[in-house]
Image 1 (cartoon, rainbow over the protein chains, first blue to last red):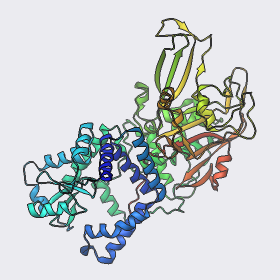
Image 2: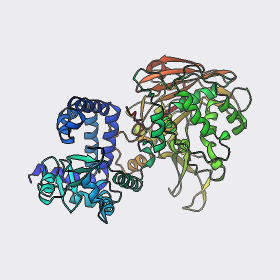
Image 3: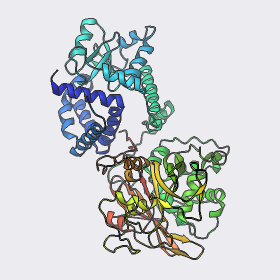
Length: 96
Length: 514
């Protein structure tokens, strides 16, 4: 494992141990619902399923198809807020 | 997935201990309540083939194996070992590699939900935030009544005037504010109130529930709240009659003596929804001036009553070198009695005053538990626990021995308010020298304004109206039976009397299923 991956790994461990990861997940979920991201994605999924027909679409195909759009549609403010939360968390909890 | 379900899961469910293993995976790797479980999850949740902790990790249901979905390592395992089922470790859903789809199984979903609830309880989060799931009876009702109403950004559903029944604007303005409290709305519209009273006819919360039905029924004609008024009169006798009443008193009456008569027997342990969302904890530290010993008490509160500049109370204004002054954002305060015209008093100023140390004076000596004698002391209030919905009450009506009057000083208030500086925890870290200016992006202690109650007129005769926020940022003015659009400026420039703000991070999102 290179240094970068190692650091990611230990940050992730710390976040899980403290329960912060679950809190971040809840925060993200709330933010994405609030800003309408969830509704947009739901509409997008419905559209794809309607085009292909319910019996001709698998979850894997659906995930591959919507992922790029899903990532692009997350507002910058939401990304910033989460990044800030993680930064604050790391400031309070020394890693390594 | 076919409607018949997954045959592979069905055959797994024939095994003796399948429930136990699903439950264990949930407890230890999906939603961990205990620290021990989280530590284990942090250590062992990696792909057994590539070591990654991301890429949608799944756990095999037949043996101990974690693999990532993104690089198809769990697929590989499923194929070589012929273990067709795996649990997604992020969401707890079960995937079948034979059917190539997630499986929705009633038993598994129940286990997942139970474990999720347990974990939340262990972590101290309230379980009543969960999404609404229709029961069998509700599904039946939905089938029988196929007409649906959808909420569009410009719809005015939920806005309804209230007829004034003779000086009842004190009630109307509060009812408007309460019926637009997002958490209360979600609570009552999802039919969560279970009345424990012998005669539901005299239950105020049942009446609230009916009011919500009226408000969101789609009718546009003003509602006549005679039932509510009658209940209020029988519950809170001091508000009965056709004289003018105080809106704040009504709110308190509604908050503290509502359902089930529980309040009478256990004054601090009422579990009704109103109590759950409005109750906070106020910490009071009394410091002895001789031995510096601190005695701390924590009391519940339902609103924060703030003194205003111009009141005859002797503690206004702030002296700049008091401890509370250290938390200003570089704002200047005139040390003399006058507040400069350029910067009107803000809600933050009032809060700062509320939470600064106050000398109790030589006439109010308190017995110190440290030095066992009656000594002069200082008292400081801080927020120990923030309520989910904060109610700020600006003391505009002064009733002292000398005079009775209304204080009309303008107090500016923000749309978003950060309570971090007024928390007991902030005070502690300030005293240890650790306090830093809170970063503006941290939303844990942030409130956002959603209702303002105003009073026009004088102490003797006046009128109450309220501003309420609908959707995300639309404001409406409710003046008894008349509801009009208002701008944010109208709201912020108004002479606020009661301000209601929910925590912005409280999960009040109401899921509309379409």
